[in-house]
Length: 189
Image 1 (cartoon, one colour):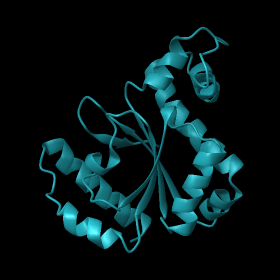
Image 2: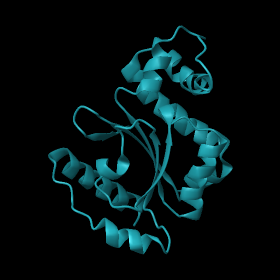
Image 3: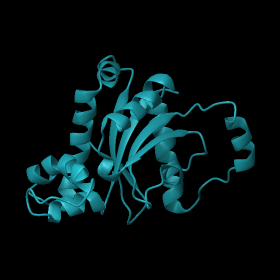
Image 4: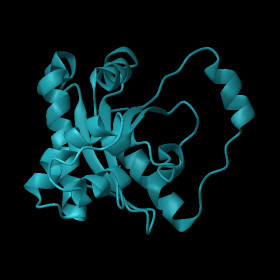
C-alpha cells in the first residue's frame, strides 16, 4: 500500500470508530499469524495518554500499527530509534505524529510559569514542549498543534535516516490531532 491508500484506510477506520461501527476481529487467529513476524502499514508516534489508542481510533487489527508512545509526543534518541525501526526496517511509508485535545503534558507546560521546573524527569518533557507553548503564548489548544510541528522538526533535525527518506519521498509524515470529545482525527496542514 502507498501512503495515500494507507491514509484512506486509516481515515475510513476512524469514521467507523466515530459512528460506533468498528469491525469485529478474530484476535486469536491474527495473534497466531503474527508469531511469524510483523508487517505494520504505518508508524504512529502518539501521546502516552491512556485515552489515545490508535488501534481503536483507526479501527485496525493487531500488527497494523507500529506504535511509539511518549508523553506530549516528545522524542529523544530512544524514540527516534524506535521510529527509525518502524520506518526503515519494517518499511512503513507513513509516519503519523498523533496528538490529541486536552493533552496533559502540553497543558501542564502552558500553565507552568516560564522556566518553572517540573519534578524528576518530567522536566525533560516540559523542556521539549516549552518552545511550542512560548510560540503560541501558552494557549493550550494552539500549543498542542504547534507541538506536533515542533516534534516533526525535531525528528527531521535529529535523524538522518528519516530526513533522507522524507526528502526522497519514501516517507510521508502526517500530523494529526485526535479529538477526545468526538473520536475524530483531523489531519493538520
